[in-house]
Length: 173
Image (cartoon, rainbow, N blue to C red; front, side, top):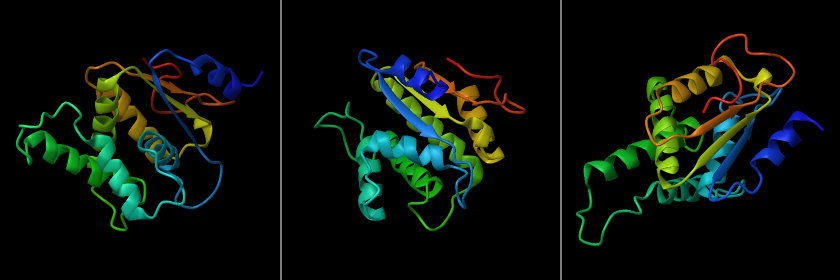
């Protein structure tokens, strides 16, 4: 049994868990954050055929605070933060033409995963990390290293080679 299938079997039918999977590509242009785009598309229900405006709208809906009550005022600090997260994630995964500040990419992705983990157990699987670009490895290290509660489980799967830099290895929970 291959590693990808083994991981797939391990995360299948986890009770109440959201499982997001991204895969690093071995070649191509603009693929540094391809696995992040796959994770976000899965979480937000974004189809490959969705135009950018619809994809951004789905991303914003994903970030909508489902705890907000009907009497809560719009424009709260939490709502503004979620809009900022959506804008940065949209830039990171290519839904916006203008790239955002690199230092905010990790923050936005980390906050997105924290918000998702706050709704229930979250498992993030990254396949084929031996193909990962250095920028993605930096992002993963920052997100996994600085994630606040609630807990999430990262399963970076390096493939046939081991980590040469970045996180210590698979199974950072």
